[in-house]
Image (tube, rainbow, N blue to C red; front, side, top):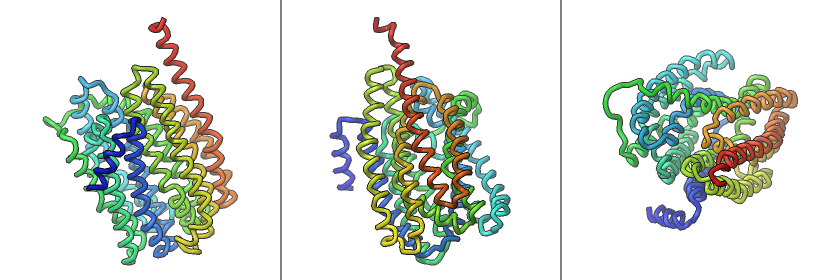
Length: 428
């Protein structure tokens, strides 16, 4: 706690709210990465390629279902005016219960066709078990959104650290005990209550009154474009797993899944941090063009100086640390790891541009872009899979390196050109 207090004082001295929030979230990711590294080392030595392949299918299935939880309802609570906040919170609470209950049923059902598709009945019970974690989410989703609205990012970061650290250490222990693929599944069940307790502890909001459907249409209409973007993001993030597993086999998927997680574990956590930290800041400043522009471009500068060097360092050291840390049997994954690691560089810039569009109420444009990008990305993966896993990793790198910078530049110019035109009369 003394270390936590010292860290708190240090971040408060930073005269940049976005950098403060990224400091909290980044520190959380660094701590998480250390425990994840320990767990990954043990898993790499205790699990075989087939186990990793099964884990990839199980986690991908869970992620494809959970994406419906990122439906824009929380974003609306962050963005809505203060006078309407309480009523929408009540609506969001009951809507989330309906959605997450439906998702629990959905994941429980799809376990069977997934097992049939990959010809392995070992997949059924783990997929069904992970579905249970969905029922904990409605208890604290509203509080999570309100904490982000209030800028209490440190709570989000602390909660994430407690969850991930507990999950990683539990995974390590289960792997050493010989639980196989369950060493990856069981920790997810164990840590679900941690997030709920943290959210309820740090925000006083509680539902009042009984069940209501008032406001559901507004929340769903606002969130449909955001959900569409999240669906496409999740599809792209997991599409290579699905195609490698189907066309190249579960063992090849195990190598690819290991490389992707070892290469993008920390990077993807930092990319998610950009979304969490940036949107509330942009929403608070959107009525003041100069401040709005300052926050956005300063965030891009922070990403450049913090994120890019980390990715480059990790990619350059991969040939040395993978065989040393994880074992020589994973040396074949090094070229794949380097390529997918480098593909992370343009991602946070594009995510920042997406948050920019959301802040100015243009989620439809973000959705349209993601439809285009997903189509092009899918085509590149289908071409790349002809050259095995390395071809898929090359396709991932090229599609991200070419297309994401184009989107970032376009979205930035579009938003600030429109805002400048809109505010021009008031300045004359």
